[in-house]
Image (cartoon, rainbow, N blue to C red; front, side):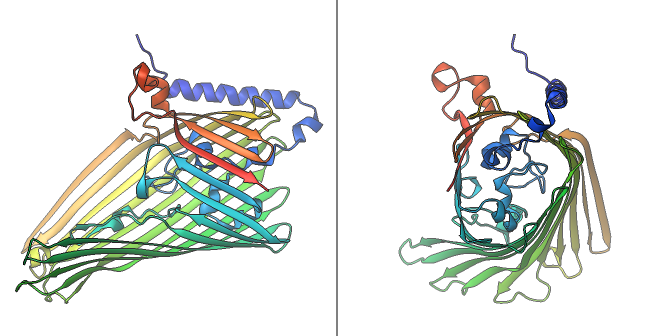
Length: 452
């Protein structure tokens, strides 16, 4: 009979491993304990490393990228461009073995230390890492495709050995045209999407404290144009009014002693938008306005020994989405407001990284949340007011693998790094010929990097 490990058993195993690593650290001589980990092991690894060390949707429950917010990694270049100071002369990329298109985590980047303390970088095909923009792609009754093939340019400068500043500007666009001819009945539907984003960040690094702060501003443009002929209504365009996103991320690594770092984190995100129609609708036309916000705080720990690294912590996440409809059904004065609030407490990110050989790293991660939500639907139709309230609590949210367990490996050959997040479904079902299925690849994400 097949028996799966429970989340509680997995957590107990990771905790036992962490205590073992801590005990081994105390047995080491001060010299060996203070010996720094190799840079590529401590910092690099891409999203294969993130996923294998217990990553989840770090900055909102619907985050497109997966992070362990208590882990230092090259992936934080997507959040804080000042990280370029840690990754000068660095080429890296990620390949997503499960997803494709605009939801894929496949992208590539390269950084260059042009002169001493001055850095330039390029990112291709990345998505916004801090903000959640899923709902931007459905408004005005039209579902629009996500933006693909973004292009980002980074710049960084070390003002001093302790302080690095960075900035990124990125852009992306996509146009989809549907032309229906049907001889005589000509119709055209054109969907256009574009985004322009700016990130600024700072990293302050001393022997005792490393502080990180990043601010993100993203401006979005969405429009759907409908054209008809043969006596049909005139051309109509539905576009986005507003849609500017703001995100802030901060965290610190405070050195308690030679083994432990305390890691507090915090982030905030907000966006609001509504429709704009051309030609303008009548005064009593129905209008919809949508707003989103997310707030997160967490506290974690990094425990480093000569042969292992434990990363873990607990977070509180609160998100709110509100859809406000005025002139409901094109009736002046009728309204409807739908509000959904989701709270995650606790959200647990936990991972253990063990350096089995000089060239081989083994990783085990655990991720889980307990979720509660409240949905309120209230409005007024004529002189009648309505209100419904639906609450739910105690539910769990699975991680990227569809379960709560993550496994991965890393291989290091000089300055070349290869990292793999192993597909948990593959481990359970095996390859296709032995009882799995064709959609179960061995790896979910493959990441590679090279320092030069």
